[in-house]
Image (cartoon, rainbow, N blue to C red):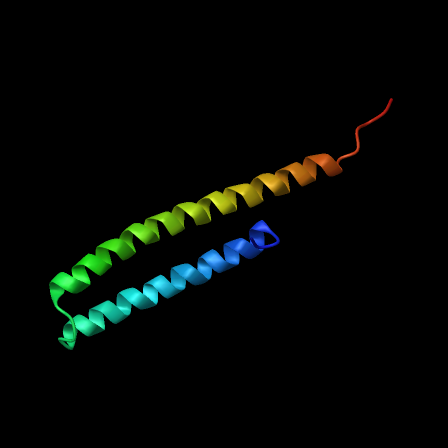
Amino acid sequence: MRGSVREFGHFVSIARGSLAELRTQLIIAQRLEYATADCTGEIAHLAERLAQRLNALRKSLLDRLENERTFAKTENRTPKTE
C-alpha cells in the first residue's frame, strides 16, 4: 500500500535485512544452547523460504522500475516531423 514501487522496494530491502538479523540470532541461540538444533533448523528453513520469496519480489520490483524508466525515456522522445 506504499505510494511508489521504489518506496515499496525500500521496505522489502528492510525486510531482507531483518531476516538476516533473525538468521544471526538463530545461530547465536544455538551456540549458547538457548535453542535446540531441531528448533532453529525448522525456523532457519522457514527463513530460507521467506528469503527466496523476498528476493523474487525484489527482482520483480527492480524489473518493474526498469520498465518504467524505459517507458518514460521513450515517451519523452519527440517524434521527428518532416
